[in-house]
Image (tube, rainbow, N blue to C red; front, side, top):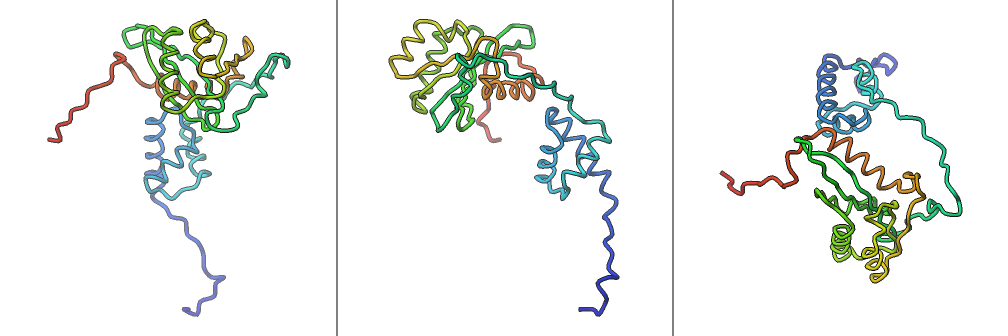
Length: 223
């Protein structure tokens, strides 16, 4: 339009904002300590930064923000005759998986958290925290979830006494839920729940201090 040859045009990189980007990167890394550079890139985009993941990765490495490398995965050694690793979720409410996470309050008192995952949708159906939690408490939690979401066809768990107790087994048979147990010493067979529990520990339990199990009271006064 201006009669100037295209070959004479040159792109000039924008300067002067990399230091601000670096500060924003470090701030988000401190706020979300277990996030990698890809998730931080997405958060930067939400804040209005127009930057690709390659530049964020370069700055991430220069600031020494890399997460510790994961240990090399071990081969899955299991008995094919007993392992239920082949049973994959095919639809919602096909398979629920349950497991416990243990932690301590700030003053040292131990407590347990029961997590229940729908393996197909990867939805966490509940996280219940109590100081004492046995098979009766597990039964009550599962019955509430069945009323809310409908019952699953299978319930996957480890071989803990809370999950193999007779009252719970009787209730499962009554409502038509088939229990399936992972092979002893093979937590990866409950991989959906194990992954969620790992995220829960890394991003919540390892970064927050809890004084009690009570929910904080929120004032309704808008003033």
